[in-house]
Image (tube, rainbow, N blue to C red; front, side):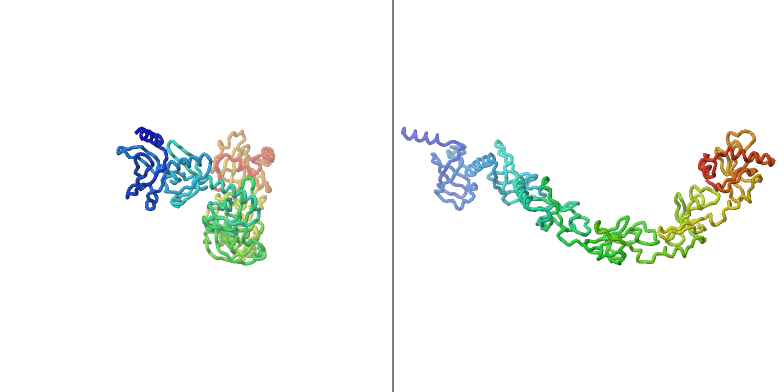
Length: 557
């Protein structure tokens, strides 16, 4: 009896709850398996804890976790699943401490990442699945990968994994090998990894290279997606390698013949070519002459005479047309084209159609600060400069003489065929009234006129023949006059004497106070007028006098 008690006590001391022990299968039931661990009673383990229940045999040895020595029924509580979990956890802790890798099968995807079975359930965040976080995680479910354990919380039995660190380490090794064995000019294979507006990133077996959009094709390309797609395998040429920054520039078009080779021979200046409109811009139209070769028709080369604001007004995308080659620049890969050169230039005959001195009629089409454009025929304008609108008036703006839609008569005064300009003059229709001014107005003549404008220095008076004369403030009255407006106002009819005629400067000096002077008094007044109006002052010329006016005035109003 004493020996049995000692043996029983010894056996109970050897079994500790929470330890892993070996047991022998005594019986296999439909829902449970009886296991003997050498204790005074056997334990029952649920059949669901066995992955291969149908292959079990009585007498097989299994490792189990001793959960409790006795339950309420006096049986040992065992668990094969928890034994495996404990063993796995100890293995995971060992791998983590050693910085090693562990294999795991993806059980499913959850918000933010993947659930992975590595013996225990672990979590791999979406940012740690690959170099570029994948948008769709379902493709990883069911697959087995190697992971690195990056975080371990033993108290909560939480494990965080990373697949990205393994991939980055592999790629770093591959990058080193690639940089050591490849050089500029080599042709390599790659997989299109990502597309952007400016190009494509190509995976060169662990090394990323940039294929810029300008190096994809010799032709026009609006976006890389028009030529490439993610996952596509392509052959590319290494254009440049930056060893320090580990950057590689790639070229796809360089694997093909450069269509700009011998371009001058195939598209000689002056030759007629055919092409298709590929792009319309405000300044011109791009025309594809062959794959990889485009020419530009500037908006000014679309018509000799029509006013075309935008190429899209006369051309459409995809339209086929003929053009003339105007210039070729191989270095800049530019070809200048013209459409209007297909027709005879009407300006070649303009000198014969509108000879200098010919009187023409036209409609005022547009006004600018410096003149008026007059349409002589469709697409052909002549320009009347403000200085050629009146012999006797200083015209500050063409609207003082004409307005849009007016029919005017003018004389052709110049033609510039190269610049495609016709200069017209309206004042040249009539003879210059200043031409014989000395016969019409002599010093001492008494004249009548209408005050048209007041200035600080005097008053302008309109005389017969649309001639302006100037009454200086000193010539208004015998007594001193402080302000011209105290004596005269616009519209007043006055009588005065001519005391100055300067044909070269187109000036006539008048005196109201000298209207009743004798000849001797007139000579004195004329000399005084010359002294009062000194050369270089504002009132020397009518041009300067009008510019110095203090009142808002336009001749002819």
